[in-house]
Length: 69
Image 1: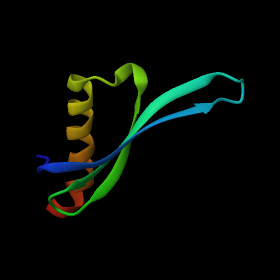
Image 2: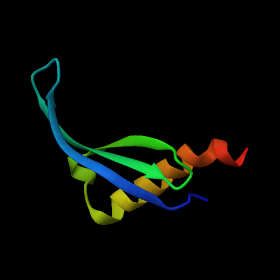
Image 3: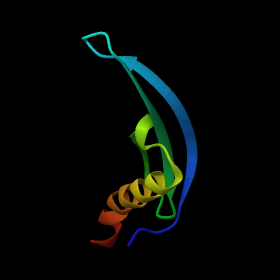
Image 4: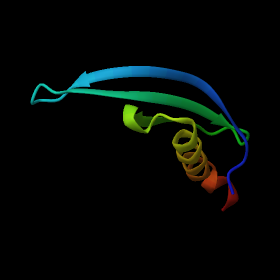
């Protein structure tokens, strides 16, 4: 199970594909209580409290996994 984590940064970003389409997303950086750090990229369409919380919990569980081995 994922331990607690702290969001350390949120950045809204945009980029353009090779076809010229604009893609918007958020980069959310976290640090876990175990000391692992990482950044999760979330598409703008998925940027809502319910989805972000679920994705962050899954992401943090993966970051902390090696500490439990």
